[in-house]
Image (cartoon, rainbow, N blue to C red; front, side):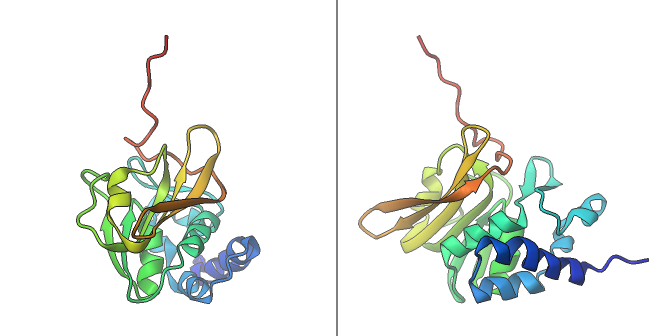
Length: 190
């Protein structure tokens, strides 16, 4: 008996994404068509459409489908835009399906993007604070979506480069695993 990934993908869209107020049709269409199982290790295929974070490499996790869909909706990505996906394979695949020009940053110094002028930057793992390199990589009007977490529960945040400064707003609560190297640094206190 083979597993019906297409049915599981549709169930994920209907049960985890749409029910969490992800109303952007382009995001929904891309999610309906992107085979998330292709991004999972063989021993995690059964989890591809579950409401869990999935480890795909040492120290790397794909975000829950609901959370990545909500981050994408906050970003409002549009076809033709230039995007950077930092440790974000599923978000990258969804944005590519939406017609964005996507670069992935999975290895090396993740705090230093390979260029600047990105319309959209996204990360599927938590960081203690938005890295300055990611903020500096935003084009005027560019948006960064990530989860900042310094305890058990984090806040999904959207940063926007207005051209004259950065704005930030909280979007929702989320608790993805921390991106190694982006934890809060221990500080000495008297």
